[in-house]
Image (tube, rainbow over all chains, first blue to last red):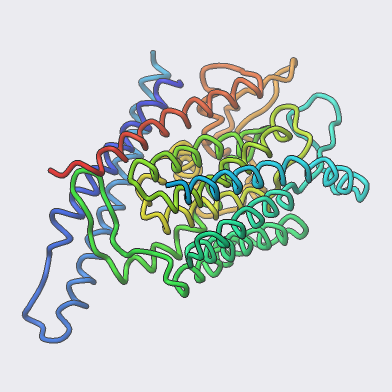
Length: 76
Length: 330
């Protein structure tokens, strides 16, 4: 069981780094100019929404990964 | 450099010895006033003094006040205020059973001095990819971070010595990472957390003579969160804390709601005849880190504690690798 926990820790670490990459490379530079003075508020809202969706996707991936790793461990 | 070494040495000595010398009399006072709880993982009816948070906060405040005398940083003031507030919140919870909302809400309020004193940088630094500027979102992150780190450390305070031993590993890892990133002043500010945890571990390790209580666990967790924010090492801090994060994640994903541990009916762990710990088959019980470690078979309390420490060392190594990766840009 312990090796599964190490694998899960490592998977979380990789997901954090990939998530950071998406934040910096895709979300960070994202801007909108069509909405006058409010463009930054709308852009921030969109960024926050995408970030929250990413968090939910990451949690789902971790849940699936957790179930897969520990089922493998129990079957072995 | 010498002007940094002297305050570092003085604060570390103070942090360690204030806790080391105040705990024995604190244990006597707590026992005399019947502030003891049963150690559930012992065969005999062993009563242990609680809470040890009083010594922990004393060690932190004394050493950080000395550091403030040397550096006069707003970051240190924010750390002292937020950590003291977290101690008070935990102490109230130690004395009186509060609702599930109490700790998250009040710890979020305790984080506000970090914002009011401007003791943060709103750029979030990621390894390999650089920084992202999130000025408004970062305020939310500060308010969320302190309840998360506080409650995460509180949630692993389940066996003798685990919370304090885990904090020794995680906090020294964070200090090493701050030194790697050449953030020397905050690295020195972070060192007392490791030394306070180390001194407390001496009395908390199996068989415990004192428990930290909510006041101790929240104090350690909140200080860890503040260091992550004022040092700009939020991601690294989260990585070093991963085993405890996994514990909270497993608990929440199995219970599917925010709930106090004492409100859970199902028992995740039980005792064998020779009083080893064993995972239960109770489907209503939450999945926890300890339960997963025990899925391979019964272990003693000491063996489970060391399994958690090994996981903490592994995640600490990943955190240090991450700190080195901060200097690399793709």
